[in-house]
Amino acid sequence: MKIISQGAEAIIYLTKNNTIKKHRVIKGYRVKEIDSELIKSRTKREIKVLNKIPINSPKIISSGDDFIEMEYVEGIVFKNAFNLDNCKVIGEMIADMHDSGIIHGDLTTSNIIEGKDGKIYFIDFGLSFFSEKIEDKAVDLHLLFHALESKHYKNAKEAFELVLEGYKKSPNSKDVVTRFKIVEKRGKNKH
Ligand SMILES: Nc1ncnc2c1ncn2[C@@H]1O[C@H](COP(=O)(O)OP(=O)(O)OP(=O)(O)O)[C@@H](O)[C@H]1O
Ligand SMILES: [Mg+2]
Image (cartoon, rainbow, N blue to C red; front, side, top):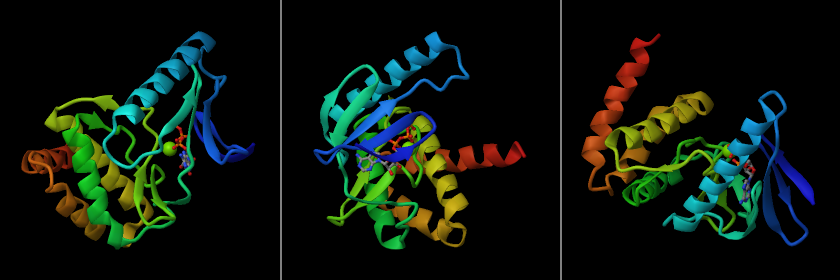
C-alpha cells in the first residue's frame, strides 16, 4: 500500500487493488476515548452519506470502525486543477446534493476531484450531515466561496458566480443565495 495523503485525521492509502483506503487514526493530543469515539462517528457518518449521495462520489468497497475502502477516483484535486469550465457543474452538483438533504460540511477545493474521465467527484464526507435548512446550505456555499478565495484569489468571484449559476438548478436556490449573502455579512462584521 502506498500513502497518498496524510491529512489532519486520516491516512489515505492507494492499495494494490487500486482502491483507496481511508484510515482514521488517533491524533494523540486529544483524550484517547474521545478520539476513538470521534473516529467511529465520522467514519460511520461518511459511510452513511457515501451510500446515499446522488452525485458522483467514490463507491464503498468495504468498511470498518475506523476505515473505509472505496473506489479510487483517478484525477486531480480541484485545488490543483482549478479552472472556470467546471465551476457551473460543481454548482449543479451541490444543488443536487442539497436537494437530497445532504450538507457536505467541508466544501473545499481539496475535497473535489476532477477525474481523468472528465467528470467531477466529491469526496470527504466525515463532517457531513442531513439537513433541509436553508442556513446549513448557505453555510456550505460560504465555505466553498472562502476556499476559492484563499486558493485562487484572482478568479474567486468569477468562479463563484459560475457555481451560483449552476446552483440555480435547485428549487431553493433563491432562498439559499439570499441567506448566503447574510452569512457573508455576518462574517465581515466579525472582523
Ligand atoms: N477516493 C479517492 N480517490 C482519489 N483520491 C482520494 C480519494 N479519497 C481521498 N483522496 C485523496 O486524499 C486526500 C485526503 O482525503 P480526504 O479529504 O477524504 O481526507 P482528510 O481531509 O484527511 O480527512 P477528513 O475526513 O478527516 O477531513 C484528498 O484530498 C485526495 O487527494
Ligand atoms: Mg479532505
